[in-house]
Image (cartoon, rainbow, N blue to C red):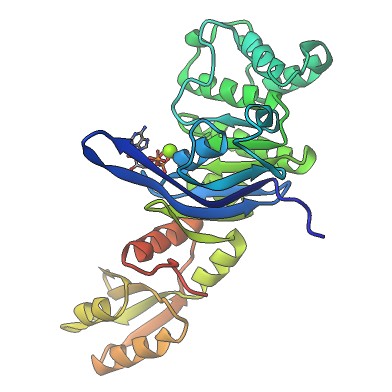
Length: 329
Ligand SMILES: Nc1ncnc2c1ncn2[C@@H]1O[C@H](COP(=O)(O)OP(=O)(O)OP(=O)(O)O)[C@@H](O)[C@H]1O
Ligand SMILES: [Mg+2]
């Protein structure tokens, strides 16, 4: 028997209703699941529905339809007891009590899960040290810098020791070094404490660094749900850089853009570079035929390096152009 997933979202939809206006369908029939101990990235352009789905999972908002279960228990009928299983750092909102100190916030939020500061004193100290907040632990949160507040929010969420953790834009406002630290800490938590983590971020380096799998939303729908390594392989084999000798033959650029969805042409001292993402591997033959018919002289063909950011931009663009699944395998 397969292990019970940490999270299951089944056909969830949510429309924000505003009086006198057509509603905004923020989440449109979304389904996905997250296995225990998995670290999953929830990605998508602004307004894709990431925060809305996270709020639905946390029970802060009731979906119009669909079901959500956490460790096998449906969220709505088991609310608020189900909150013992999950904690979250929500984007841009106040996750903390500003008039309490760092230490008091940690005690308060962990107390919600029945964790006494006596027995977890060492763990709280460990977390505070991990985030280099030990000098600030007795300072009121309102007197901290933006990044320190963010770090305190993450500490409070971790201190609750829930098996499932949601982080909505956790590195927003963090300096480069702290962002790197946080990634390291999250990796450590996933492996050493067996937490299940769902993280949403626009920083693809963060996602690539800590997630095994990504779920990409666009317009409220899931357009990709795949292993990061698989996506990179898939796109890595289809992204080409073709260097031509001399200038770009007349009409070639237009012909390429009419046949392929992703083409960029740059001119340099010695010739022209064409970077192209093929939707299907066999499109390479069509590409060669076109280049030949224009008499283009090829200097070099190489694979273009891909990273998650390029993959993300490409699938979202294809999704917008009406390819339902965003990409095909
Ligand atoms: N409280 C609200 N009332 C009305 N519409 C809302 C509300 N919150 C979000 N929306 C709309 O729902 C859609 C999805 O928003 P959501 O915040 O879930 O996106 P997101 O993926 O988290 O985006 P971002 O990357 O900008 O954080 C957007 O069109 C947004 O305008
Ligand atoms: Mg959001």
